[in-house]
Image (tube, rainbow, N blue to C red):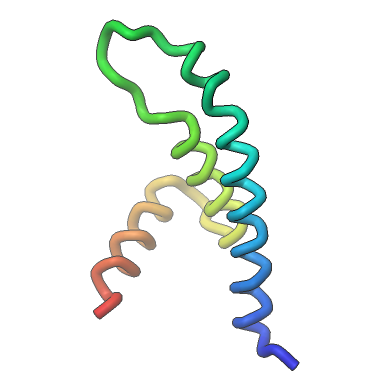
Amino acid sequence: MLSNGCQRSIRSDAYKQLADAALKELSPLFAQMYSAVGRPSIPPERLLQASLLMALYAVRSERLLCEQLDYNFYNIH
């Protein structure tokens, strides 16, 4: 039997694969919506991925998400 942490990891991986596939399909549509001139924006795919992470991990705000990402990336080693 898998531990709760492993089950959550597998579930998160499945959600990530589903989200990546959906965003890959939507990418050409997003590309059509943006102008070739002006300041480049944050890719909508990245914003949607961040929203999905916030929902999956119950992060209350974008600021807290950034803090969690910074903390986790700095403490990998």
